[in-house]
Length: 60
Image (cartoon, rainbow, N blue to C red; front, top):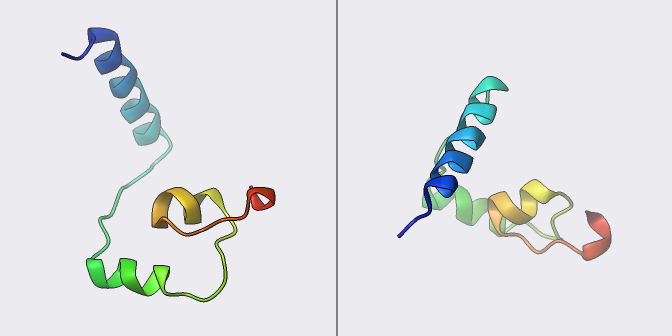
């Protein structure tokens, strides 16, 4: 069972994301495959967390 504090933390996160104008757009499997197939390693936290690309530790 989730702790009610966990729910509050998630709601706070959602409110913060909304306040800064963040919009999540679900990529299609084809889009994800195209990004992951790019040559070389990722360079950013977005590459690592958003696209599951390999990112060298010294890049972030």
